[in-house]
Length: 416
Image (cartoon, rainbow, N blue to C red; front, side):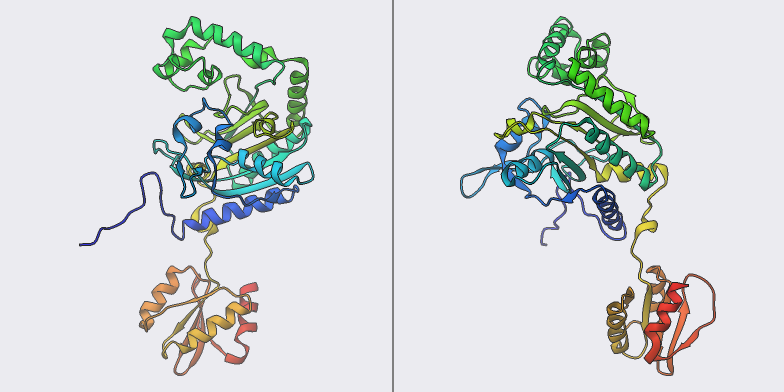
């Protein structure tokens, strides 16, 4: 017996009608951010592995989550684990006019333990604004993400906000934190006992109880900002207040990548019971361009996992499959051999009317069942004695149709 293939662990198939939510979500995101001047960037799934190593050798993404391999040309390649470094690479390579405002959508790959909303292949929407250090662009980016969730119907969402300082104030703070953690090293979780020197800030973001307790009185970056970083943060919070966007100060928030500077933020779905309830976030990365070999280039952006967003939507009962699935306007039932259905569905589609039909010479009863399952509004029934129109979403008497005027008649009915 031949092997039965299945999707690899941590990957999955999404079939219609559920897949309609993926398409509808990306479409809504595109309309939402393009109205603010962001244009689509389509990037490769593969890059040189060093591109992503530059985001931080001590991060989980680089140390243990990247899918990397040597291709047939001897190049060390990685599957895309995140979008920001790739968009910055494209900016440095192609030199678009700043500010470069870009959005993207597509799969990312990370070798991590599968859990609710987290997969080895997950899908993400995001945007980047590169080339300006103005704190008002931080407000714009955060507001776009906030308002997108609201547009989907999500209301149980909390914005967490922090500042990670910059090259002026972070080194001194990092040493201050490292000294504190060294004193409390025996109290940390097993993972961070051995890695605090590599990236002490990551201990603050640890969700394990030993690290949370041990860092209860740790110093936080937001209390040790230089004057410029404090001024930047004040402008961001003033902008959020002016737009009526509520936020919580989150001094432990460091995110998972080393390139973040100054503004850092995350949106949590309060309707999700898991401690891992983040549905998206991002921040400023003013040092990333230099890390990738370019000139100093300020930037800010966010990413949001589609699977995580949909879990939050399910928890709040919004953006359901039946709200976004693309049902046909008309289902054609043909009891006289199928040719009429073939020709009529093509004519209706060319006229801009969504139409579907059955195949394989099924009986009238079987075709009607399929029409009802399709959620079409109307059914056009072709029989030996003529053509009639039936409503599928409500009760009503059949109506005789003239083949020559059927398109115009259906348009009028669908507009009602």
